[in-house]
Amino acid sequence: MKKKKQTSTRQTKKSLDKKLTVKKHQQIQKVQKQISDELFSDANPSEVTDAYWIYATRQKGAYPKSNPANSGKWLVFVSVDNVDIVWKKIKIATENGQLGGTSKVATARPNPNATNNNMKVICVYTYDYTDKEDVMRVRQELRKIGIENKIPYKTDNATRQGQYQVKGNSRISVYYE
Image (tube, rainbow, N blue to C red; front, side, top):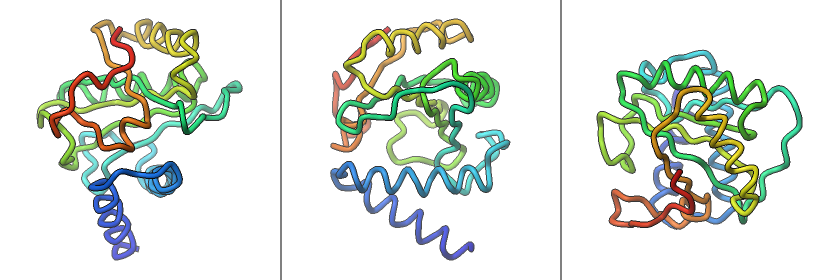
């Protein structure tokens, strides 16, 4: 299993160096979610170094299926000292159907797209950035659980195109609330 996981991680990193197709991005997420669900579902992100992400999935209530052309996420940046506490709140809210369909948190594994080693990102996904009512509803729920500072909203298309601040891209956000 260990050898297979290393190959999967190497392939994921190699794939991220290029612009991703929707299909390839979905394949990568599927593998990452599977690893997360099997090995790290109850782990603290600050203690995981074998995967880049830990995922949470809605367990209660219906939510529209993600539209790959228009999906996106709120990016909640938190200090490494607070990532476990904030993640637990977002994970519970995601599973209880208060947010979108999925959330994920960056783990302790160093990520080449991170702009600051003292900060981690939690991505809270919505199915369609053009559904502003839903996007802002999710933002309001994040406020209710304690995320009060302004946070950016980035489309998955921008991610697939390799648009990151660390790579010199700016004004990537669709919303900043």
